Image (cartoon, rainbow, N blue to C red):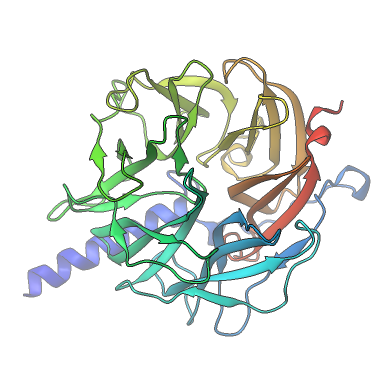
Length: 388
């Protein structure tokens, strides 16, 4: 019994170290030197909604949007409660509504899903299925070696939800599914990409094994792909998916290689190519890439951190965007959404509403220790991303 307690403590300490260090950077609490930019050089996207931490609410993070049939927009996010803002602290899923296409939002939270995990429920993906239902995906985190994505279905526009369905039933362990990460392919297949960091009896590790899970029956059952090949054994984490014009699937991966990495599937997610580097310069931080409905181009939002200072280059700032007209091979129209050197920008949700796009992302302050505690929602015209 004593050895089990010690082993559990070691796992928790390793997890805390990973979250604090960001896969090799200095701990957040030590990165407390404030860096300033002249006001004329400061860039900050419009603030349509800011979810600040407060009493008994130390963190608001990792959300996603869904447009409802009555025209309202629902934003669901991880609402932490208690004293701790750790990834492993208590949280439930809360929501805010907009009746004017994202310009303004309700002032009070609505509980969407209570905490049904041993630790929390967090990291939301919302998806309008081809049959008209809404699917909500989230992580149910019980402990440091038990974190599984679940799905619930709503047939009444997010008023009520079905019983949960586990998306992983063939394995046990600590799996990460980021927010706004689940896709439905043109043929109706549901697909999500996960990073496995630990299993029962395994030590938690930063370099994850990546898999895709797919469902051809609207999420009732799920099948796992082969593991994504990682011949260079770089740190792979927090994958996302994009269906490409030729029917292949692009997996976009957070890494410690100084760039976002790619893997491709040409057989509907059953097998994947060896991980390769993209041209998207990046710290150890995720990117969100989705297709712009009006143009067919890809829009990426991530941290285009090109600093030559090795300490600055590790930070999740600035928040940037770029356009690809060739399915992610090359990128143009680089833009800056946020560039506070002390900002901490990550976990981006993206929703296209007519000619506009809504972005929801963590936007806290690094020296203040609120990096993941603040979520911001901004609304921009899609044409802005093409401007010089």
